Image (cartoon, rainbow, N blue to C red):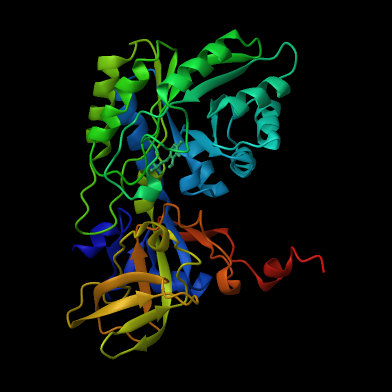
Length: 418
Ligand SMILES: Cc1ncc(COP(=O)(O)O)c(C=O)c1O
């Protein structure tokens, strides 16, 4: 069934038609944890992590997969990745804090950021992070001022490959003019400076072309421009593989993506180098769904189905025009569909979750399940209109456990000092 194929692998319909994810019925999840709730099928998450690891190792044995924490910066998710043998890409101090709590070996952490603060550089050095990805000369100034006498910090230099992928402009990063990294000429100069530094070890290069990329060519095309900068022990080729959000989406498989990427690496990079990849979105998107309660149904020339969440728990739509699909949890494949717009509860006309979708007779009290919300939804959750950020539940073989609780009114007031 088409809609079921967008839910986490292993999702089923119970005998009475109720959607079940990670072996847990949607109605039971809603009763126990309330709505909205972000439900992660833990086995699906683990399976994807293993798939990435084995597929990369099969093609380039001297390699590492590091999960881009920003896609789902939740301690429990980072812990799963650590348990599955992945490293973690951390963009900023907050993700270092949760990664360490998740039990990550600091040596497996890769720090990113185009504007790393003194505090973040200090944390990286103090905790012994494996790699700091230098984005600019100021990163080098800060590192040189922070690494103690006799100490050495391993670094990569982020290079703009000058590759434009077919994705939303807001998630493009490898094009000329990107705010991330340095163009090859400027990178070459910074590399020479790092090579002269007694406190830094120039380990290699980093490249990342963007996110939600649904073809493999841009990944392959990003390798040659960095190869021209010389031979190094490490190449971090970023993340960016697209996830499947809609019936129409056909993202490349992990294998096809790696065939292209590693193929380019074989052509252009030293055979003895270590390869790192940093998948985020494609690692987590399909492992989760968000369950909402339908609050109102306003029928008319346009029918609006308003749910109890929206841009407070899913900013992907407003920021990137990301299209999602949805199903009513107990009538996933029912007939009698009508065209509706699914909207959120926030005071913005832009708070539309799904424009123009057909649902079977939606009514107040229905549970609306939106698949593929594992990436960047938790990340960008916010308190708009006093929204209490939603909980995260792991559903595993029929057992559900809360890993992040819903915010409380007290949480909303906790930072007030007057
Ligand atoms: C440096 C870097 N690596 C990896 C990623 C992960 O990208 P994605 O979630 O598209 O796989 C990002 C996100 O844009 C990034 O900026």
